[in-house]
Every structure is written in structure tokens, then in C-alpha cells.
Length: 364
Ligand SMILES: *Cc1c(COP(=O)(O)O)cnc(C)c1O
Image (cartoon, rainbow, N blue to C red; front, side, top):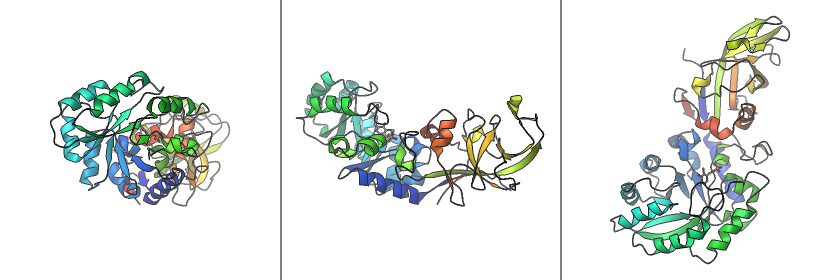
């Protein structure tokens, strides 16, 4: 028998999540952000569920290629733009739109030989200090781009650092408006958190929204709100089974280092899932997991191929019992990836992106 672990991608959940985000975005068009191979889900696997998007936003040319190979004819946006001169040839050939966040990219464009002018998104650094032109240099960048025959339409964008927390988007939004108010072109500002938390303001959703994490069913502002609060459902379930049980006596230790010692006589399960599957090794004793759909918790250290679970809530569970590491159990109960991430001191993004290639994935 094959090792029982598997990941499932839920096409209908992707559709529903996209529809929900769209509803909050008013008339804005929607980039489905599928960088990092669709946050670990696989671009090919999510394509069907997300094809109602107006465009796909990707990291690099390889991801853009995958979308064109899937016969996606609509817009594709390179979120960090081109990395080298010859990338621009593929932008022409594959009809890709690209972000321009640095003078070096304008230099490349000015040297690019093409009949086809390209659509670009000029990025302003409004305070995150990662990518983008400083406000004081944004307008001169726009003027320079606008003078290039290689450039067609120029859209304006920025990215929020605090859309998911109490600081919010006001300060960055003000900078963006002050600098760009009289420039023509479409605007794109909002990631998932900005759409969900600040989407009531038309200036936030603007012309294009750029949700990523929400499409995959994770709350961008967990633990302030959970996915259910935002009406989101998991797009990925990581499921496995119990492959052994142990009856522990008080004081018996579990796993490497014996960091968990049974406080009383208890039964535990060994589940076929470890950090080589992408499960976080840092998940401590007490991390949530579903056994036969019932809420349980891990005990001891996560091993490379296994982890252990306290069976106290499900005394009848034995070998072959269903384990849901995150997502939806086959019986319908949900363990949100954000809860597992929080226990392990990280975010849902990292867990979904870390799903290991050895885990078989199917789409339903
Ligand atoms: C990743 C990314 C997004 C999507 O962010 P989420 O938090 O996943 O919604 C939007 N815009 C840019 C520029 C990004 O890099």
C-alpha cells in the first residue's frame, strides 16, 4: 500500500473564495496572484478554480509560460518585473505586462528592440521600502517611461505594509495620492488584507485588486479574524492516516529528545506526516490536528516522516484512522491552516508554500 499522505486542491473552494473577494472589490478587476507556484498549490492545479480572474500575477517568466501553455490569453503581470534585458523579448512574445520598480528596468526598456509597445505597472514605494520608486522620484520615472516608444500604457501601483494590522493603509494611501493624483492610468494597490479590511473605500480597490492568500482560504489578518469570518474556505487539505498507536504509562517519553512525557496513562497515534512533507518541525506539543474529524493535538517533536498525536479525544481511533493536518477532513470538519501556523509560530502562507514535492496532490 502507498504511504497514506496526500494533499487535495479544492477547485470549488478556489472559485468561491475568488467570488467572495470579487464581491468586496466592487468594479475593480482582479489579479489572481499565483506566485510561488500558486502559494504551493500548483499553478496548473488552481487554474480551473481561478480562471474567472481578469488576470494572473506571477513572479517570473517560468510561471508566465505555464499560464500561456494552459492557453490563458488574458493579462499576465510580472510582479517584480524583468530581471534581465532578454526577459523583455519574452514579454513581447508572450504578451506579458510587467512591473517597473527601478531605473535599471527603464534602462532595459529603452534598449529593447520591438514593434510592440508594452504595458507596464510603475511601482511607488510609499513606505514599505522594499520595491518601488521613492515618492520624490516617481514622477520623473513616469515622464521617462512615457517618452519611450517601447512603452504603451502606464498603470500605477503600490503595496501596503500594514493592510493586515491596526496601522492600516491611510499613511501609504496618502503618499500615493499626493504624488500621483494628476497622472493618467489605472491604479492597483490592494492585496488580500487591503481588499478584505479596507475594500469599502473605492480608492483602495481602485482599478485592479491583487489578492493572493485569501483565494487559498487563509485569513490575511489571523488571529484577529479567522478564515470563516471572511467567508473563506481552505483550497488545500493535507491528509494522512494513523499508522501506529502506542499505549503510554505515566512518565513515558515520546519521540526524539523525549520532550513530551506522558502526564498520565494515555494512548497516542503515529501519523504518516513529517517535516519532509512540509509540515513545520517547529510545531510544538499542542499543535491542532484532526483525527477522524475530531480536534486533537500533537505531542513531542515532529520527525522527518512522522508526528505523534494525543488520542484522548478519540479513544476508538486506531490504525487507518483519518488524520487532517490542515484543511478539510473527508467528513467535512475544517482545521484552518492558520491555526496550525500560529501554533508553529508562522503564517499560513509559509506552510502552504512549503508543501513538499514528495506529497502526492490531487485536484477535486
Ligand atoms: C504577493 C503579493 C500580493 C498578494 O498578497 P496577499 O497577501 O497574498 O494577498 C499582492 N501584491 C504584490 C505586489 C505581491 O507581491
